[in-house]
Each structure stands twice: as C-alpha cells, then as structure tokens.
Image (cartoon, rainbow over all chains, first blue to last red; front, side):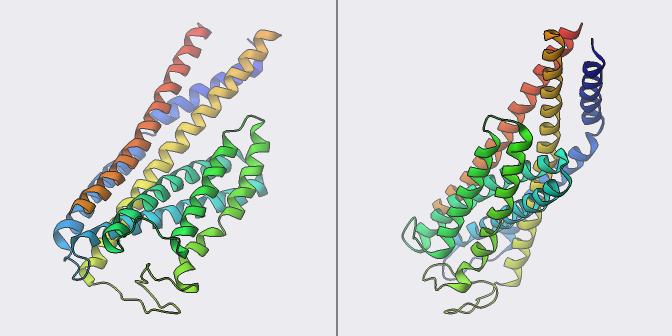
Length: 253
Length: 41
C-alpha cells in the first residue's frame, strides 16, 4: 500500500470516528429542534388567536413566513461561503455553501407550495403572476440550477468555482423577493411590516407575533440541524471519493 | 380548515422527505466505508 493511500485511509477512518464521537452536538440540536417545533405547534394552533378576516386559514402564515426566513438565511450562508471559497479556496467553505443552498431549496419549495394553498383560500386562485410570487419562483429556479451545476460531471474545483459565482450572483434575487411588494404595486400580497407604495403594513396581534417568532426559531434550529448533518455527510462523501481515487491509482501502479 | 391541514401536511412531507434523502445518503456512505474496510483486509 502506498504512502498516499495510507494517508487517505487514515483521513477516512479519522473522519468517520470524529463524526461518531461528535454525535453529541447533532443530538442536542435535534432535541432542541423537536421541542421547539412542538412548542411552535402549540403557539400556532392553541395560543394565537384566529384572524378576523381570513379565519383559521391564516395559520398557514406562521410556517410560510418562517420557511421564507430560513430560505433567505440559507441562501445568505451560501453567498458568504461562496465568497470565502473564492477568496481562500478551502473545500470546507464550498461544502457549507452547497449544503446550505440545498436546504434553501427545500424551504423555498415549502414557501412555493404553502403559498398557493393559502392563495386559493384567500384570493380564490392558486397562482397569480404578481411580483412576490414571480421573484420567489425565479429564486427557486436559480438555486435548482446551482444544485444542477454541482451534480455535473467534471473536476470538483471547477464546478465549485462556477457554483460559487452562481451562488453570489443568485443571491441578488433574495432582496428583490423581499422588497418586491414594497417596490412594485401588488394587488394580492399584503405588507405586514413596514409600508409600501400602495399600502401600509397592517402589523399583527402581539400573540400572533409570539407564534411567528417561535415558528421562526423552530425552523431556524431545524435549518442548523440539517446544515450540520448535511456538512458531516458531504465531508464523509468527499473522503470516501478521495480514498477510492487513491485506491484506484494504487491498483493501477 | 382543509387548507390548513393540506398546507401543514405538505410542509411535513417535504421536511421528512428531505430527511429520508439524508438518511439514504448516510446509509450508502456507511455501506461504502464497510466495503472499503473489507477490501483493505
């Protein structure tokens, strides 16, 4: 067995045992996530009052908004780690950027599916090509393209560089999604906080705000857990691939 | 209320679906590591 292969094997086994030993952090994260999700369900369905105009369907709002927050956070993390990767060229930064983008797509999918369900009840239509919905759909497509770049064949660092550039440029859409209903007139999407050109933010009842903050905390903890798990798995996958490459080289020589 | 049930069902389906994907990736990696360990013996 060559010295290179020995090194890769040691790295692989060390990575596996480190992942097993460091299982306390994911367990704590998982536990707090489960507790906070249960708390959020209590605050949404029991603690918070029923909205007068929309009725019980308004309860979709809490996880819809919390998912949007997590998607923005995930894409911001991708943006920061993409910059760090281009500056320092360390693979761990690329791993964080990739895993975070994937989780961001999961949360954007939740936003894009719960939104139409709420819209059907409130606006009597599943979809409207209005600024917030359209820019959110574009955001989903941008990060789906980012993931597709990552799954292309080719050398990892070329793909990582291309994906990093995509991750940085793609993030431009995040503030556009947020400000869409404030910059352009929207017949459908209400402004809750702050004011827009055609409408003033209605605000929410204090008990609804508590339910919203608990939901945001719960999904942010879920995001942290998924990020930690995803990065651990991706690191292991990288080590296995590197070991297999060295093994192949060793067998050929 | 049907819309609320529908929305929250979709949310949990998506989240659990993603966790199942992560679990499958983990199992695949474990199998690969075990295979490589056996290969080494």
